[in-house]
Length: 112
Image 1 (cartoon, helix red, strand yellow):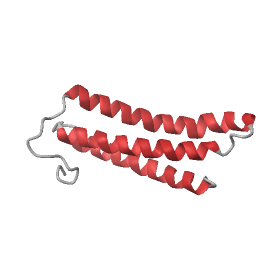
Image 2 (tube, rainbow, N blue to C red):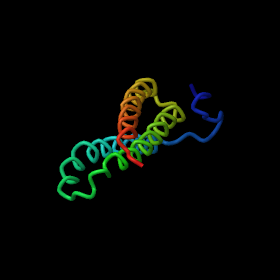
Image 3 (cartoon, rainbow, N blue to C red):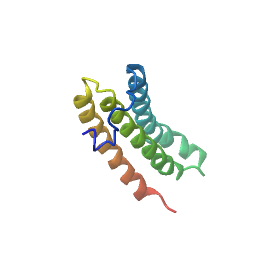
């Protein structure tokens, strides 16, 4: 798994606080994406009229950012050899599948 995640052997390992920071940030980004896309934009965009098509564009942007940080969090758990690395890997894979699904939905709604 470390080879798959491109973690160099013998490299300096991140601290537990680094792992927790990346974990918190990646989940916060995924949650922010859902809040903006499914709560804020459906309520605010119709009131503003011109912003009706902004939700999917922002959703695509936030999905890509969330996906990158999810991968970074998995790498951090494995790099630190955290004892929770397998359960966290499975959790992140489920979150990443959901983010990919939402990304595809948003891409079909974007009218360029």
